[in-house]
Amino acid sequence: MIRRFIQGDEQAFTELVRQWETRVFNFAWRYLGNREDAQDVVQETFLSVFKSAGSLRDPASFPTWLYRIALNHCRTQWRRRSTDVSLDDPLQYSDDGSGDLTVPVTAGSNALESVETWELIQKALLRLSEEHRTAIILKEYLGLNLEEVAQVMECPLSTAKSRLYHGLRGVQRNLTKIGIRS
Amino acid sequence: MQCHEIQEQFVDLLYDEQGTPSAGSELLAHVSSCASCQKELAALKALRTTFKVWRDEPPLRPVTIPQRAPVRRVFRLPIWNVARYAAVAALVTLALLGLSNAQIRWDKSGFSFHTSLFQQSQPAADFYTKDEMKAILNRVLNISEESNRQMIERMMDTQDAVRAVELRAITHQIKEDRIRN
Image (cartoon, rainbow over the protein chains, first blue to last red):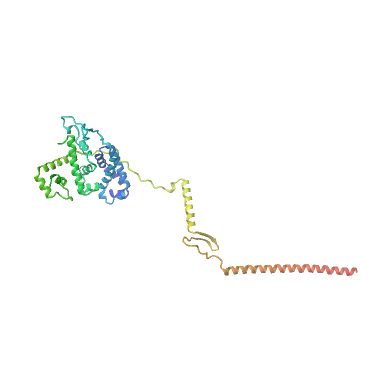
């Protein structure tokens, strides 16, 4: 199917879109924290894919090629709304003026019971730097291997590993701030 | 090696993948003997299990599939468009003919078309040669001479006839005068 798409088969392109749009949407949503922005990224990503089909030489590298395009659109979208850190569900800033994000959790209750874990993880993720967040999403959500993570991020393997490690530490730290983990 | 230095390599322990360098013996030896690093590694492994709660959600809308621009067909163009293109084509053709020193000729040997893009055109081979021109002139002169001769002869014949009539009239007059005298 990818080979047919490279050769300009529009039906193959439609099939590819249907096969990959959910993955790209969820990748962008995790990166941006906003569904509408993620939807825009999905549309722009597949438009770019459609226009630059000729630049894909090896059909086997289609996933990393696709994610690289999606990542570039995510970065552009992130820069556009860099001053707006609000998510689909509004967060509150701590009262001490530190700027740390906190999640409204009622005292004495189990946080995991009151707020879904995956939402908290996403909020913790969005507090990371762009590079650390990207590494975590590519590895833990998309399940790419370390080589592929490095390819999508266009960096050496050692750099990808370092970003992944610091990303994990960052999520751990942010979850602690939120009050989920000790 | 310090703990914070060795922990940078925890990714090799967390993701033991084929094709990437596996955890070094120094790292393994340190972790097995360091409670702090063991705790840190266990925390990261637990964190990784938390990511499994991520679930896919369908996109808000299906992606709009872009369509390739349809191929424009000449026969579907409006007539004024065809006329415009024809006019442009004619102008371009004329310009090219001018640039290429085109010569279009219709002579005794028929229609001919010559171009000379980089050099002056040579005299066409269908001009009359000098000998041909001489023969033509001779022929014209001969025709003219014959015509003149015939005309002169006719004039002389006419003159002779007139003179003969006049001579007969004069002779007749002389005879009458003699008789009268």
